[in-house]
Image (cartoon, rainbow, N blue to C red; front, side, top):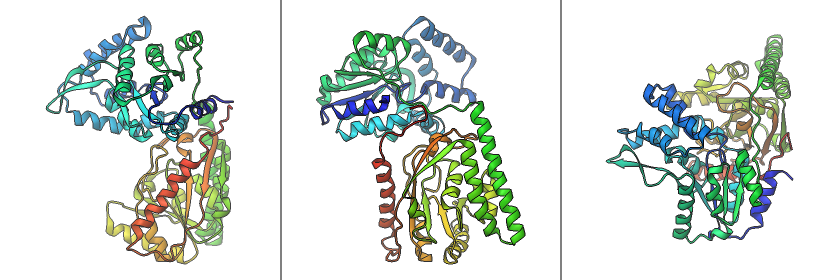
Length: 483
């Protein structure tokens, strides 16, 4: 049995109800790495750190790591450097950094563990020494309603450079959990705590179900002495030389498929026949070279009704290869105009006669979609993301109505394609892919014959809900290559 399977069964065997809480440390526990380091690097990149702060940070970091000193002085340096900055500005930086970096650091199996607690009706809490801008965007994404964090002191919307209250580290974190439990009528004896560091010993001991998660060596030893079970969440394979080579081979394979398709198009005088060959051959070869295996549920629905508008949730540049391997022939796409400059997408876009849309120009967008509707009526399917942009996580973003208008105007059905974990194998804006299993679910075609403009908003919401339900109803545990 893998660690995540044990953890899920452990939660399943616990009592139901909100009186049981699941307290999660953040850095190293829910995310693979440290949010403070990500913030610091971002500020360094933006030249927002002076030499004095840099030297003090390096010194205090070494004191924490090598001498076992608590983090109070390091926090004083970090928060003191923000004195005079508007809180709204720091919150905006936190949101942006979540989208660019921290979202990709969330352990995939952490979502499954949190979902198991939600199913039991447990109260979810993140308890961390980090500050709210580091944690709260991730907490919203993960559906965790309570955050116990180290707070900034604020005066008239501006940071004073001091801490408001205690640092939620070591004894301070344990005290915060005890206070929270008293305020929310939590039964600590039945509750869970998950953490990875030795400084969290008191935090873990505050509950009846301490669960060291991704533990450091010191915590592993202490947990063994106390009889606490230790577990590690699956860490997606890091991009190394092998993955770089495989990715290069994948691009080369895609280029070969494109070349074959281009030659076919030139010989036959038909971009459509060339696009069909490029999509099928290029995508299959590229996925194989990258070591990505498609696990498709509902594959028969890809062919049940054509032409159709195939909708997909957009997570990664891998989506291009996924759609080519799935749809294979007689389809084109709609993409934002920026994709016309994407070196991976642009050649395929030309061969497939993709319609590029400037989402900031409503008139141009409508004009661009007119030939798409004509293509549907002429027998070609359309692949389009109703979200309109990539999601940095598995969360389904709000849907735009354009794809649904196209289906109604052309009188064709909608076929939802739900992609589960493309973003794990190839991060948004990444150049390289990691090998692994990629899960796809194709739902049954949805007729648009009786749809009207008046009820379109409701119809769009219904289709989006199908995606949300498909994501949540998938088996929580995804087998990994090293299982």
